[in-house]
Length: 64
Image (cartoon, rainbow, N blue to C red; front, top):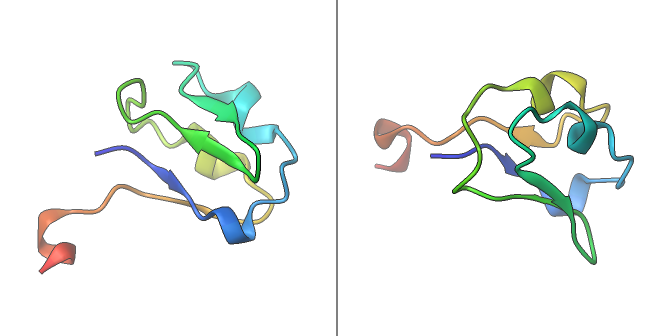
């Protein structure tokens, strides 16, 4: 499962996009988005997000 960006909290600063080694993050109309097919769950994006709006992948036990 890929990291995810909480769109309502994203200020579109772009710091996550430049940090992503797999180029999984792209700018969309309202916020940045993470392509789950490209995301490797490295967490680099979450480490640099000033809004802390990038969340770790859900684990199965969290979905229950």
